Length: 540
Image (cartoon, rainbow, N blue to C red; front, side, top):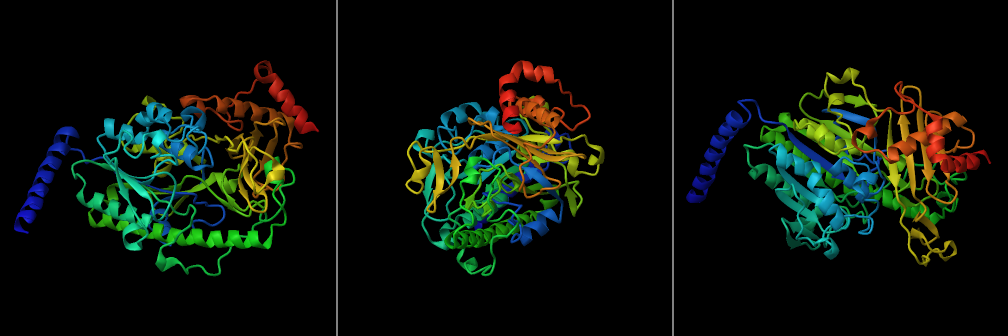
């Protein structure tokens, strides 16, 4: 014991000496760069009450900092969204379009072209950060075709990544490239708690002379919704919210929404209510994890110099427009996510209504680390100025892009043979949540004068959905056929611009900005057939 104690004491002395040297020589005596923690949940909604069970999280992060109330994803599906978080890019630039290897989810192409320029890789290479990852990475991570669990993406000093998709028991982790198998013993294997333990160990034994970036990616509240045993009976009377879009027919929406059976069967409603309760139960362990991280940072005297972000990769629905349970759709419940941040210079109990997207996380974190965002290939913006007291007069965006490429099967689904091939995610009562032509792009606008969503589907109809969110926050009425045609043309033009944007051009003025320039002749000369088809469709 004496020799072990001497060893730890010697390491502590060395750490202090190196820390003094590092601060004086490398940073010229200035205080060390801020630490950064990113807590990423899986499928956590904000529109239908997903944050309600997270009392500790709201108190320790939201109440201690800022809650962004208009935060969205670039794509409402796990892998494309996570790729956008890591790269700061829209899907058309990072090329991850769905959860399959063919859709570039953790593919070798992703590994070669995008992983070297993710923000954690830049933090480690250029900013002197030690980096830690624990949890779900990308849905296809660890598959043989993607290099197996031996593959550790560049930029990570400590790597504890889940093989494939979210689970709570009976999974394999890549521990710095080596397999670690887990069973179904709660005390040893419950994944959310395992991630918490890895995180506590990292905070305890990390190098103290370097700032750190820590990303914890929980399985909750993703299916199979397995809660910790102590929370199995929580929320016995909770049901999915019966908001105005619950169990109603999407009569003026894309065919995939219209095919949902309304009213839903009693068994479907019981299933989604049960799913809703189970999702909340899994979140109680996330709440514990957040508390543990914050308390550990406080105990170590590092909390005041640490930014903590809490967010999700996409939203979720439970019965909206009679769709049982899933994400993937263009509506607020699927594309809107929570975002809470605390850290140096952020005053407590703030609410910010500016339009923030998950492509902004990377630029913001790089900005915190002092890196020039102009040197990156990122499409997003740093919202660091929005969080401090100097950000009151910040010029900010009024729109952003949402992209989704539908998934389907070449054979008919046994649950839904009448719909034929091309559908996916079908339920026993023949309601399908996805299809090949559930492929769309949207411009989501929030400005002083307008709160609007404009979407086009890439199908034979060029089907269009437009919603005035001011008067119709639940998106019950598609106004594509009644909206002013000049606005329709401008939104169509803006969508095409965003779908081809790259880097700075993704941050150009939106339709309702004073600096926006619209030349119909340019649109008609280059995109005439597409807009003509769109115009004919909306006028009939």
